[in-house]
Image 1 (tube, rainbow, N blue to C red):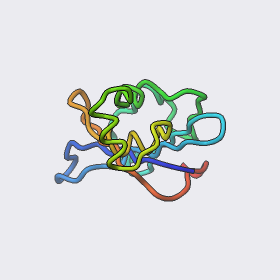
Image 2: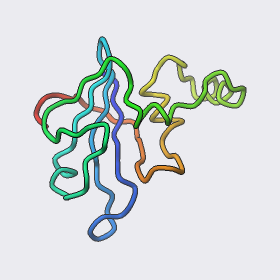
Image 3: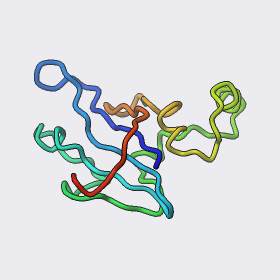
Length: 120
């Protein structure tokens, strides 16, 4: 499974960013789970993910992430996709590479390794 990490890029308690959770692409859709360190931080939950426990599942990408996707039909985006060898259909790679930061959100997306499961 391809995953991306979501971090709060605003410093929390001593200037350290907090890992919010992990987004993954699975057959039939997407999954998201909060990281324990985020749940322990006391920060508010993301509106698209009101349950703190378990794995959130959806056939479509949640708005929290979808607004970060660049329009792949734009010429400058196509140039970047080609330069970075990114498949325009690889949502997670697009988010981790071209949708990392947006001006309207304190959260940052980064590519992540590992596996998302029901431990969170």
